[in-house]
Image 1: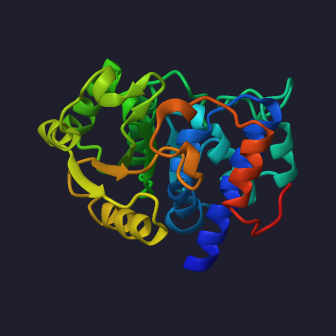
Image 2 (image 1 turned 90 degrees about the vertical axis):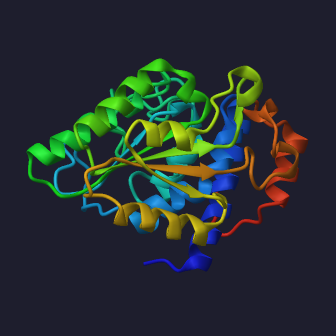
Length: 281
């Protein structure tokens, strides 16, 4: 298993991948991708129990579902660097006939991708269904999901959140990327949601915060705590406090880089701030 330095080095490389992928096609979503790099690296390198070879059934292993599918660059990078498909394939991001579309899709059979996502608000329902299927199959593995905080403005989430607690779906860990930014601005300016902790708790979930969501050790500690809280009759919500655009100073703390690609000069600056660790594709 990789140590903290190796995980940190991989996170740096993932940030480079994100910047280069989005820059090449002048299209994509770098801000949220950069902010979730530590989470994805921790999940796929340390936390999830997976088996050799990918299949869509996912029986006998942990599953992950990305609801906010626009942050596909970080998902693709970590999947590739975790051995799901060749790293060189990252060079095809968002190209016609590529398996690496702007939002993850399933019709091309990309290993690691179990649902098409990007229509916000739907991933919670899918994750709950998968978690219930595991219970029906007597499979004691977990289901993980990731959602944007702005995404929770979608009403379908709250129907699903209410359902999960009512049906005691306690093999589910849903993480909220709490960066307080969305495409049109700060979440509090677009549609204030108040306390997400209070809301999830009122809906019958167990809730914990990871205050340092861009720190590998904090993410690992927090997610391991979340795992320990499963199996107790309630679904688990993790509020992951991240910084939009983390690791690239001019992209941080602003919604401006939600869906904007860096130009040549900006790419060079971003790459300089994230020194190559494992080799670019």
